[in-house]
Length: 87
Image (cartoon, rainbow, N blue to C red; front, side, top):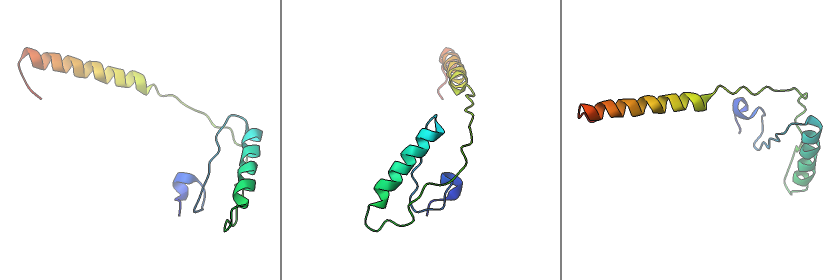
C-alpha cells in the first residue's frame, strides 16, 4: 500500500501527472484512466478529484550555499596543506 503521506492517495498504484495547466493535466489523467481501465483485473481506476489548487515553487538557492561550502572546504584543504595536516 502506498503511504498517503508520500503519494497523497490511498491506493496500491498511484500515477501522478504534473504540469502547468490544470485542464491539460486533467485531460491526460482521464486518458490514463481509459487505458488502465482496459487492463484485465484493474479495479476502481479513477482520477483523484482534488480541486485544482495552484502551487508555488520556492528556490532556496542551494546551489549558492553548496558553492560557499565548497569554497570553505578548499580553503581548509589549503590551510591543512600549509601545516602538513591530513584529514
